[in-house]
Image 1: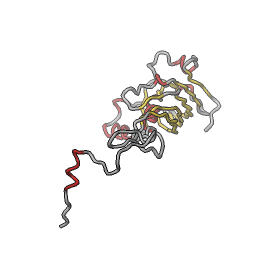
Image 2: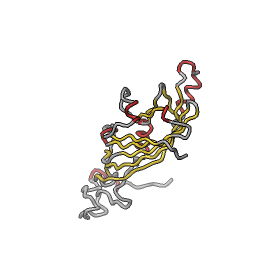
Image 3: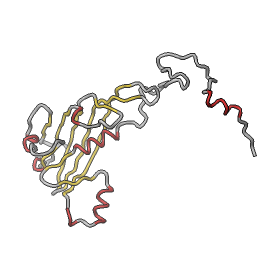
Length: 202
């Protein structure tokens, strides 16, 4: 659904979304009242410092652009969005740092919190759905959703290039830069005893 209502959340501008959210903690806040019958489009551009990934093995090196479309049915909010940015990673083969552009589409559902009226079974079911979040008040924060999507977009074993040659296991030379003088049959002295073992088939 393409909305006629459109708002922007830039770092260097105070927008209607920002003005209504000045009392709220840092986040990507959206005022529910702004989501009309035709929905709402919201754009955010946030610098890397807005996302705290200090405990991770990557670094955001370019502004994060977020485009979202929201729809509302009574108190239920439905989100469809996309983000893009550039991250710096360490190659899992050669250990050199490199940059990679990442982007992903995502969706989410925000439901009003029921509080103490919810049964234990209902709460467990709610928590098991990763696409569902709960809110109180008149605003929702999509920052946790975007942060999770960035994490999911990072490869477990990042490669600087598909055919990365990695490091020589003997001398540690980066084989993408130059070959080393190690022989293919060179072996760590500590493992040399294994060459003397014989396999006996039973």
